[in-house]
Length: 377
Image 1: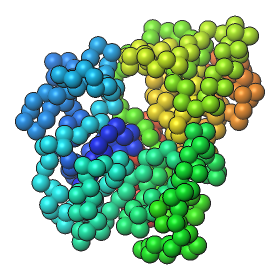
Image 2: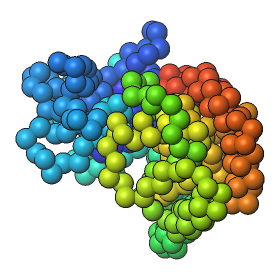
Image 3: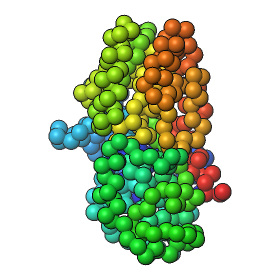
């Protein structure tokens, strides 16, 4: 099976995970357009590096485990292990001129709104090849109808199981509502009672969208010699609910005499970040701009016991409470389960079960296999 993957013009975990996974499946060929150097990163002199089509090195891993754009220190460096990030739009392949030769065309999430890619989008939508898959990795709970009506498969990273918005999205709700129009579009798949032309809430389109969450690629990380912290949280304060939880967490840690690492500065290098999580008995993941965060998947991968609120999004083969993760409804339940886990020492078994569960159900290859399964449902 042959895929053309229209790459995102900015960092995108969903797109990059699926691309990474498809490359690991036998009898699958994937071509990226525009050429995205970090899809083809490799080790060079012991460092993860990325090259353009002329084999000129343009990215290199630094001492903190970040990929830096050489010759431009102002560009923010991304985690070298999550290497599917940036495109080189000046060096395209010619695949875009031969769309009919592909079985499927995958339109990356942010590629759909990149100004530089408008001609690409037009060429795809006007092509005779209508086997189009659209990846929607947005934190917001709405559906882009203009792509739904063209797509054979619409993938949503955060498919709600409850009609609830993340904290930050509540403030944007009316901004989106202002964009709604009457006069429903014509869909390939019949949809009744669709009132909006540009965006629509998920509950109107539930049967037409399929969930695939973030994950992280398999990669090396530095392990601590032993567990140093009872609990850790590393993350920027991206919404008021996270801020409130961290304030309660700090009081909880002090009251119970726990050894904790809590950082909201966002200034920790990647090597140190993964080592701190690995050195923690329990690590906390909290919703940020959206519910689906990298940290939710990183924590079990880095062999710490995941602690997370129960999320109102669909997660296929989610972790099991008090077996492979610590899942809670509110802060009181978090306190009770955390203290019980630390007192009994069950954090060790939870972390091991979490890592096994991740490797069985949540690798990038699993994400790609889920995509293929949806194609044949």
